[in-house]
Length: 351
Ligand code: PMV
Image (cartoon, rainbow, N blue to C red; front, side, top):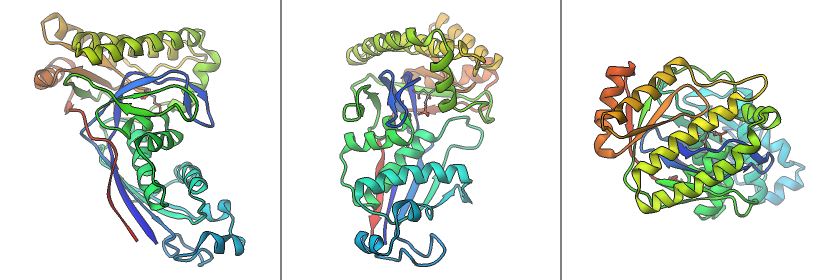
């Protein structure tokens, strides 16, 4: 029995990933760039070959070697059926387990191992923070699963692996500000880039489930939005400008590019048929309040993912003032301040 535990944090993109070039390999249509947060870690433990924990029988017992499994006729698909998944202290739904098993099948294929795993994951995003957890979730799962199945992957290969679980998870593998490159399977990885000090203030306007998943919405956007063909070169150009602004430490330019890229992403999404609209009146109100801050010399810029919540980019020394203004003028109950966080890391592994 081998066990590994990893921690990873969510990330928020300044230049967004929206649209796949290849669904199976989870290759993005364009590169993107994000800041990994230092709040809301996910902690995931993967235990391989824990026959008892995965339930019925002992067909794949503790310490069973790959060859023995094969000899006993235990194929990958069959053993994979017996992965178990606990999420925040409750058994996962069938859908959640299927997604994790699909990801573990990939790890097992790379490792030449057929044993199932018991996965236990704790997400510390408070219910109601309105932040997606797939990035931290799959970054932590990739890191823990690779170690538990004995794969020795560097940051680059780990980010390629995490990408297969959820595209944005690729960017939670390296720490701080990370670029995720578009390209083929080998070239589409994430790495940290130099950037000036940044902070984000998370403004939750609605903690509910989003009406349509990003996966589904991306498909519909590609298939039906007449603006999608324009989104690709526009985002590629913004990414180049963003990388240059980060290297130059030009906070104002970083902020301007962040807000315009977010609005362009929502425009291309809204161009889908039937239309998808993630931003609500409350979201727009936050964009207006943030524009008002700028007009009064408090430099801050808005962005929003596939949901109504808004994340405000600012300088670390201005974050408290931004949070206070969001509370006072946009009615945000508890804005959360985040600084750049660490990449995914192992906290324990052993047999
Ligand atoms: O990888 P996913 O399915 O979580 O997609 C992420 C999409 C956005 O959050 C909207 C943009 C991004 O780059 O994170």
